[in-house]
Amino acid sequence: MSGDAWLVLIVAGLNVTGFGITGLDKWLSKAGRRRVPERTLQVWALVGGWIGCWAGVFVFRHKTRKTSFLVPLGVATSINLAAVGYGLFG
Image (cartoon, one colour):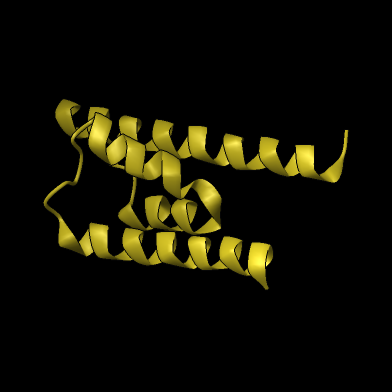
């Protein structure tokens, strides 16, 4: 398998996991149980799972009004997009 194929698999895995962690946090919230720390979700987005985290926010309607979560998620997204842009055009 080529390096590019591995990269695609890794990024896909990060995003599927980011989506799953966001869904798990929503479920834990509804169940009144101990939650996934916001920092975990934000770091997961930063290392490449930002699409999955955003999908989880919208699909599960989770943390949609919490700016203390959404702003760092937006920053993580911007950093990732800049890195991709730099890789494509740099």
